[in-house]
Length: 422
Image (cartoon, rainbow, N blue to C red; front, side):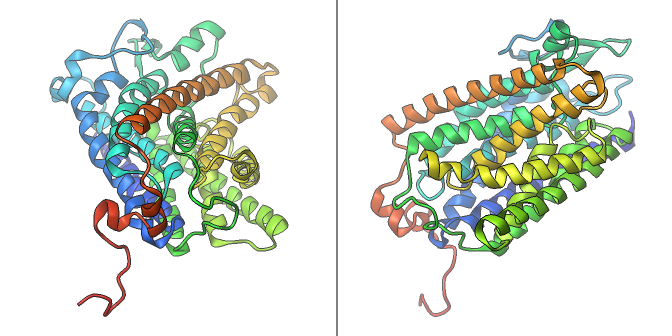
């Protein structure tokens, strides 16, 4: 067993786990003061719930072992509860549980990302029901499509999910998604759009009405996300090597460029660059580089950041034009950013992109992967959310939304002034 790579994976897992509290700060700062506890609890609720489900059966669904192409929805019954993974196989470079832990943090974060679309108006219990069902029938299978693979003794693929291994068999190249552009960001963004449509608009929804109550929280959250994202991207190599180093550098370059691009667009469009814009631009760049971090030169990573920062800054305005209330711009940043990063590889991926190969094959498989995950996640998320809304109810009462839902849902307040209580 390689203790260096094992330590690298465990540290990377810890970094990715930190991203969920970071997301809670990022989202919490964007909502109104009387909803900050509720917003942050959606992330922490996902952390607790998905952490348990992953151990019980999530990993068994996401990483079934098989010969040949793994079915789109399969389960490894021997991995239920992870008991079969306690022993380290002879010759393994790292313990199986190190990989289990690393992938658990991806599942937690992906579910938490969805919550940004339903800020200020969602019941906590209904969110937890949605999170459990969506993770089970959407995230866990999609993770298998993208991340699950096994190697033969000669190093070639022995089995894997259809997005990577399957399309490699069919088209000669598989879709590239190194750290989760499809499985995490397009997946979460599509589900967020579906829930925004199911729950409807916040009261008084229009541009300029709902403003962030705490931009310092937003900056803190973005900083924690960026810090954790090094584990997210570089850690996906599962080894401390040159590919991990390339992913690490690109995780600096792309979001830095996206941050600058977002601020320029803001200055041109609104007259002032904002702190929330800087944080959002960095996150947009991080989203876009996620699938591409190991397949681009640093210069092309900067170009990707500039494109993603600019387009995502414009995309967040679509909710006002098209009339859906994506509260915290999960669609504009994660869905659009994930699509940009995934499709960008069709043109600029090392060796197989259009500019290197002169062929559109890589772009084709990237588009198939992106559209498949988007449609699958959107349809099922909409169905799950619709059933919950029509049965137990998903949205709080209008009067509770106006007053702020922290005290109604959790019996707490985010800010209590000195002397306000005896």
